[in-house]
Length: 221
Image 1 (cartoon, helix red, strand yellow):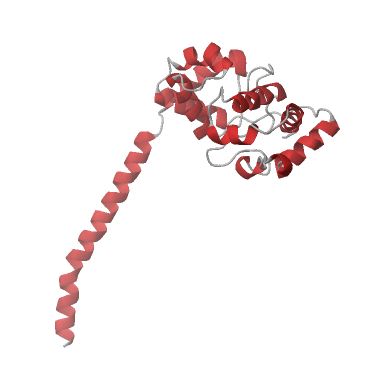
Image 2 (cartoon, rainbow, N blue to C red):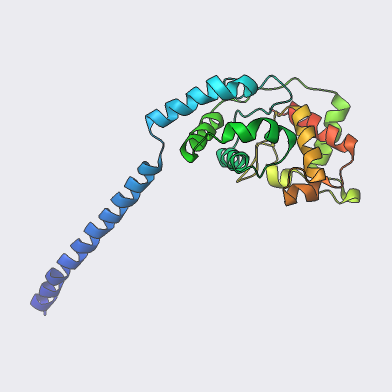
């Protein structure tokens, strides 16, 4: 009986070895695929050159725009940035500045450059803005954290996170220029920037509510 069991165990060894080899081959193939998708050094260097030399004119060399008309990109979630860049290139994001500036700029970018640009900005440290009017910021925080139940407005934090740093595909809002944030809320409300979920949020916001939320976001680190 012992000899039979031993022969069976030996007979199974090639099968186990084959399974092990195949498993290692699959792992190696997956690892190769992952690395193949990673932008190479030249792509990263080119994206950084574009970020500093071209995008930096409006958004700042490191994505910390000092012009309140243009958004801060430092620390932004990369998946969100790629989505927006593709929207500019496809001319499906229709707010005024997109049409005036970004449609043309993004038309020259391929997918790899968009992804490496997004990665560059995501790794930049976002600067802290000086606090604004304390009462306005406090009102904005209340709306951000709890919404406005009487107006059917949900809490912004449900999608953008308790710290406004964004989550999943929802963008970081913390530290964004109040002027830019207010302009985007108005674009969502009018559906000029056609994002159904944000139109649903913004459609019942009053102008002073928007100003309060924008002031709160700008003051967040």
